[in-house]
Length: 303
Image (cartoon, rainbow, N blue to C red; front, side, top):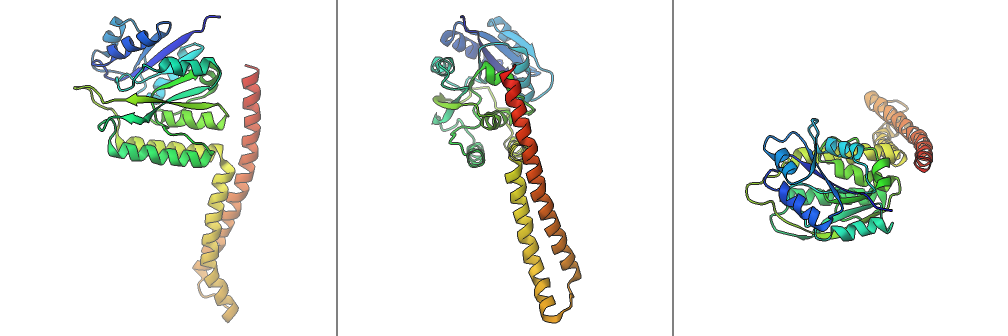
């Protein structure tokens, strides 16, 4: 059977680089159908991409997450490639990444940028943010990933059709990775070279805004997909605070048979109640989560 391969390129004002990305992709994967998803560009990105032979889709909702949502909904292929349109990713090894999907060695192959990059490829805070996110995700999901935020990914049909993307912005790569780990998809990383943007091209990343969004995504998905760990940790913290504040009241009552620090006693009692509620909430949500996992697996098998 012929394998349908789609190369999907998200773009926002990439007039200077999009032609080279399309040309390089066509050279490396001539059988791939190339799609450019234009996210409200104000330059000539759309016209240039069409002239280079790509199929162009418009995504009016601003944000890379919305673009990826459109990609997953509109493109049907056995193997899907996503790569940014800024010409920073070396595509010469994409065929090896595709082979890993074809041979069922992985459901998601991520181009790891952190082994080979130039001095100006990353801003210092972006490097720190990537390492922080990587540390948190690896700890939470017992993984050993190296590059969480890479914009160069090769995916199987099953992965694309069964992962529901909800992010709106640049945190989408983090969401993809976390959900792949959560639902048991096999992730492999492949070292690639990562370069600098060419002269005249500029990054659309905002270090602090996008960093906050990524951490928010980790927090929300941690709460939603690891509820027992999340709420039991919260319960332990509240329990410790209750014991710490309540010890003063208890010691006072033992010595004097009277409570003088009434507000502190109320605070300690309230915190202990919240600790118990949090723990019970974690148990209930963990049970509900397990039932949803069973439903997800059932629907995936019978799709």
